Structure formats: C-alpha cells, structure tokens
Image (cartoon, rainbow, N blue to C red; front, top):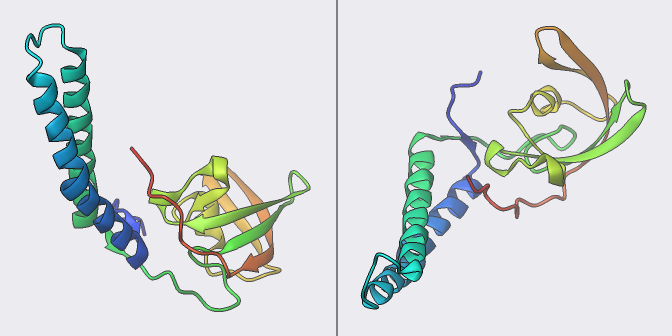
Length: 169
C-alpha cells in the first residue's frame, strides 16, 4: 500500500538529519556572509556576485525546507529482511526472460533510487515485485494494467551497505 509518503530507513533519517545540520550550521552562515560581502560592493543592479550569492543562499534554504518536510511526512521502514529474502540495501541479480539477460541492481528506498547507477527503489514496479522473494523465485513485474513481465531472482547479496547519497531534487 502506497500512502504517498516517502519510505525511509533509520539510516536515511540519520543522513537527512546530518545534512540539515550541515546546511544550517556550516553552509547557511557561509552563504549569508557571501551575500553580505557582495552587497557591500555597492550598486546591486549590476552585481553578479550578489545575485549568485542570493541564489545559492535561497537554494540552500529550499533544500533545508525540502528535507525537513520529508522527515515530517515520511514513514520509517525497516531495512532488515530474512537471510534468504530480498530486502532494502541488498544487491540482486535478476534474469529477464523477455530479454534473455541478467542485470544486477541494488534495492534502495525511493530517495536513493537511481536507475543510471543500477539502484532501484523498493517502491518501483520491479522493487515491489521482488521484495521478500528468494533465489530461484520467478516473479511477475506489473508495469501497468496492460503490461507485465517475468524475472527470476538469481542471486541476493546481503553484504551491501547503505552508503548511497540522498537524491538531490
């Protein structure tokens, strides 16, 4: 059941809290100083440094608001799973029947998903389909009402860590 709220692990929450703290205590004062320094240069109508500093400060404030809102509305989920089942932070090797090929992915929460880096969200169609399944299971991945395909779970590596970056929006 998708409630529309981000699913975060305890580690995700800790990383977000650390980023918020860094942005408030280190980055914010530095950017405020840059704005004040640029403003002191005089005529603001043609002061590129002032506008660039203001933009950086506003982007930092936006990121802080975004992360705080995410923490406020997120649902914390467990990142543990049975030793022989697919779970969060596991690297899985899947065999795609239609394409007759294997692909390896790391299953992560949606804020860490990045298909270009073979990190798939547990909330994506393939992530939802394979969660809780075991090596040898043949699983139907439902993409939409009219299309689905099958994958076979070939390997589950539990040694993965959750050192991935939180996505930037």
